[in-house]
Amino acid sequence: MKKRGSRSSTGLHDYGFAVLSGGIAALTFPKFRLFFLAWVCLIPLIGTILKKNPGQAFRLGMAAGFVFYAVLLYWIPAVPAHYGNLSWGFSLFIYLVLALYLSLFWGGFGYVTARIARRYPIAVYLLIPFVWTAFEYLITHVLTGFPWGILGYSQQPNIYFIQTAAVFGVYGISFVLVLFQSLFLCSMRLGKKSPFLAAVAFVLFIHSAGFLVLQNPIEGKDVLRAGVVQGNVSSETDWNSITEDDKRELLNRHLDLSDSLLREGADLIIWPEFSVSLCFSCNYGIYDDFRRILEDYARTNNVSLVLGTNEISKKADLFLYHNTALALHPSGEITQYSKMHLVPFGEYTPYKWAFGFIQRLTHAIGELTPGKSYVLHSLGGTHFGTPICYEIIFPNLVRGFATRGARFLVTITDDGWYGTSAAPYQHFAMAVFRAVENRRPLLRAATTGISGVVDPYGRVLEKTEMNTRASLSAGISPVEAKTLYTRWGDVLPFISLTLAAVFLILASFKRHIPNDRPMKNGTKRQP
Image (cartoon, rainbow, N blue to C red; front, side, top):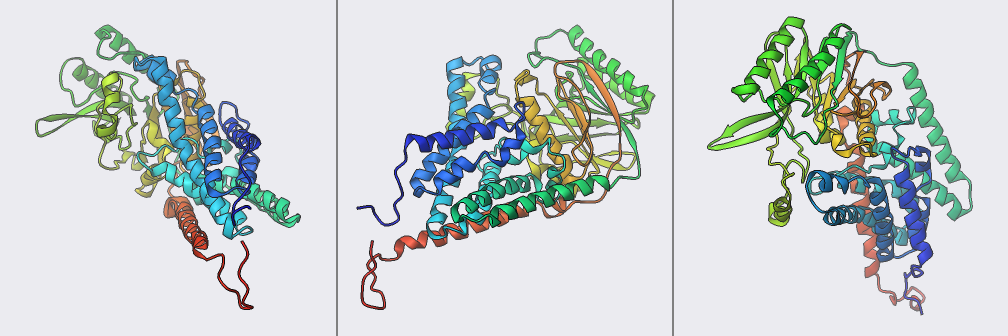
């Protein structure tokens, strides 16, 4: 006899549905760009876990999540193998462990959904998007956070839909995608069209609202001419071993590309992260020489430069190294922002008590010190922020620049580590969302690409090809008004976490209701 509340056993076909969902979901991201499949990708998984008990649903969620991240992050093993001198076997092991860890969040989604469904079999269809959003928020913040696979990012090409991000951030995009699929399944369960028709109407409304927003854009009054330099410097460049002549050649390469932007009237020129061997706090040798050259360049040409540099500070007897975005102005004023959210296992080793052995296996892990606070740069009284590389994938971190008065965003990065894989394209798509969320123009300078200029509505005005030397310029209008997302932040994820926790607790109480408790007529409840 089946136990009360038990569900059917899990068969290969169930795992097949889970794997199908994970695989399709991964294909909605760049480079694959089958973004329209994000509207249906989770239907096989959700439809299956609703028929299972929480333990089974957890395992199915993990299976789907593992496939999703294994496909989405296929480019990871090449990085430690090629640049960290690790064996391909160990690099693959790291990649699979990461995919397994991240799949726990999909497993958690399955568990919580199935638990709630046991007590609230109809209401669960409205709660599913909240549960999904809650776990996307957790994956952004638990441990060091790694929000690379947030489903909403897949919709970057859907320019009308992503305008919703100005209200609820990228999490709002994910929420709508999952709500649509959940209501479709609700219609199937009830045998009624009304839930699905309501979902279709809601989606059409959101797209129509996005269309109207784009027809009536909010533009800033001032127009700045900004230029981006892409020097195409290989990530294999060893700054400690290349000759001084090589370093000067790289500096001159970037200056030559900058000259072409000056002829177009640039007020601001942006160089990528790690494009030239620069350290403005190192007052000796070639570093001092390069500093004087750049100060003279900014003053002579009346242009501000944003440069990616490695800066050094001192604390007691220790020298601290920082990944820094430095702004050099014609007046000689220098402002610098040091990266606050470093790349784990790239720029530092988190939780050394557990992972210190990895640092002993490779020389590729840096020992950088994170910056402590936001710093805004100013161009003619207009403030702007400079999130560096990995930081651009964290919505709330970038939002912090806008709340502090940044009227446009500049992000510098080095994506050369990933070659021509999907990683640079995925990274660029995430940067686009930061522009939409805060309604701020965004300029992106990447060492080998993709560099670009994005308007406050997520439209890509200019973009470079990968692995080319290039420069591009565009007029941007800094924006002062703050979006609802800039003002409110991650309200939707907080609501989602609260609802998921409350209904999980309520659903769990069901286990404590005795099955044989006498009913009013004196009979007992049947199992």
